[in-house]
Image 1 (tube, rainbow over the protein chains, first blue to last red):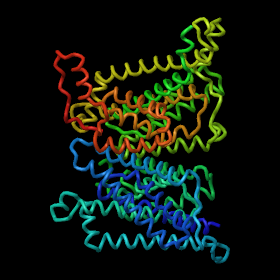
Image 2 (image 1 turned 60 degrees about the horizontal axis):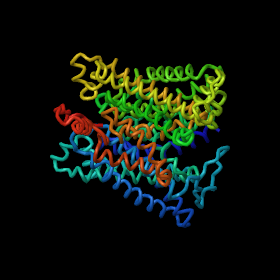
Image 3 (image 1 turned 180 degrees about the vertical axis):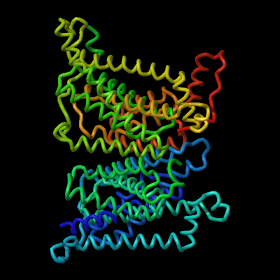
Image 4 (image 1 turned 120 degrees about the horizontal axis):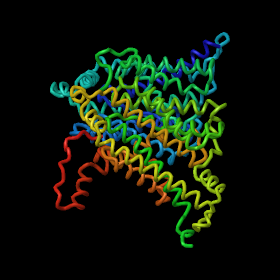
Length: 294
Length: 327
């Protein structure tokens, strides 16, 4: 029983981690909290529903389509909500937060009109396949989600650490002006960051669709807020923190549902936000110097 | 009598909504005027609404006591959240308060024995009807001034809210030109500079935050007694964003901005029915466009001066601060 719950928690947590990575990349490079990330994630989930359930195409096409659509959404978000505010005199640091809130409200209600308000089932061929190991049941979907998440995290870490573009991104995150002086095309890096973050959100959307077998326009908001909780837990802009934070939140939510009151499941994330911000604003894995207030 | 035809309950109802929304707009204006962005005002509004509704329903206290209690409890929560949140600035404060609002909502949904959960509370005493009953017992009949009963009820609500609005705007206006208001403005411009000038920023930031919480709680309590029905969905994230839009759209630097924003954005879906369906999409667009093109909102200090010049062509307008940090 406990082992099964742990497996559920890890599955959920690895999805959370992918969502949180999108937040943390954008925050790391731009110092902006992208409130629309949850809604981009939700669009990815809907693309998954359309491709697999409505059109009946295989899952890998769904992934591809979701990456493309959410990537485009990310690009548009950068152009419309972020770029106009950058480098403008007299704009407060709250402006990007508010404009991405605007984008999130717009996207949420757009999907309301496009796809309808209700739950959409997410059908796939192997939803029911499971393995019996001793007394515990593991679903193939869970393994798939976990494997995809881990691959994604490894690829992202490798890309950030070893490739030229990844180094340029980290340089931009460190100091945008210095990076620009040293020949990094920061404008392109920023676009790249937002697009990659959004595409990861899209992938996470499909993973959530697979895990919960239901997709609705409101899921973006709750997932977005959880993603926020995770990056605050793990430390803003901290890639490893986002992964660990995702797993912690996934496990604690699953355990609350299993052994506590399932109604308070969503409160876990928000209480985490408040407690962490008050006790350790730099997050569990953050350094003291980067803490508090930008 | 003519009054019967003029007084339309529907218009009065819309008017009452506008007045409540103005109070909400003012609640976020006050916190913004000290440079803090709170997304928890929907949560405070919920606390005020539930406190007052539960008190009046379960303990038979008069509405006015319930409303005051609702505002005070919300204010107390404001202190509770405000003091520790001082360590947070800007974006972090926004997220912490957003988290707070959601926690409050989750509690309303789950604390079913008291709040009746997601179903909400109905049959909350209505301000207008209560006043009407009191007057009726005193031998008053609305027919004397030529009104039907329900017209009188809606008219009473409207005027009670109008009076509250006038008092509140007056208060905030007076405060703005006082020591407190100038301290808020100084903190908004530059916190460190304000501190070095001897302003106790801890005190004034908490004060602004608590005022915001108090006013939202007050608005929430009034909302409960005007709608007679509340549910956790009334105080969700969308409400928080809506409140934010009132100030951001109208203008977050001047009182008139929040008033105009709340009025216009409440009227718009009522006037243009077809817009109602796309309301939140339009809200989203408004936020995007405002931040890109006019981050200080439609009405700012310059616009106000321009109006003043129109009215008083001879008097030289004072100089507005051009380099003020916009929201």
